[in-house]
Image: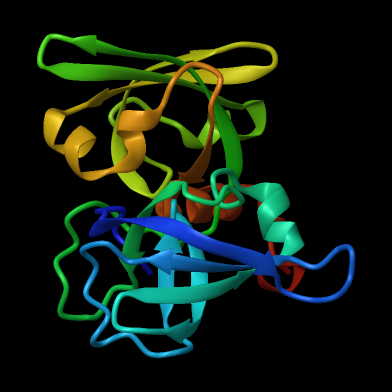
Amino acid sequence: MFTGIVAAVGKIVDMSPAGDQPASGLRLTIDAGGLPLADVMPGDSIALNGACMTVVHKTTTTFAVDVSRESLNCTAGLDAPGAEVNLEKALTLADRLGGHLVSGHVDGLGTVTKFAPVGESWELVIDAPAALAKYLAYKGSIVVNGVSLTVNRIADTATACSFSINVIPHTIAVTTLKHLKAGVRVNLEIDLIARYVERMLSATADPQRSA
């Protein structure tokens, strides 16, 4: 589990095939930037742009993860050497929950339609897949590239759900969101509680309990 509070910005410093098959994924080596790695061991989880990955190797300043082809197909920003990535280590039971509960599983890709300064902050507008519309709510939570954010406005269309977010200067300074522009795809994760509520409301009643 994660919180969506980015701990550091890292950089993809090496990228190589994770296997010898055409459909193999990639092994990424990440410069951890300001993320402390002293307590990280192979097998631990670190979120890269909101996607939970397993550490397979580490040094004092870098770590490596294997990203499957399926994960590469379902995420954005993990296949470009030199790209910066938002980093967050998995929660411990003693950590503060500064954002909201995040599983590190990308639910869909959104497309940035606007990213512009408004006063001292920035307005970020994203078109999300229509299938995610029911999980997005005014003042609800959404994760964008691993960053926990609050939805300010929503507009549903036949093909997408457009939502607006206010991004404060601190978030711009300490995450990769500063690099966004119209047309860029971003990783989205819906609120974990909303996921379970939707399942409970849509599940078929147990025939034995209703008998």
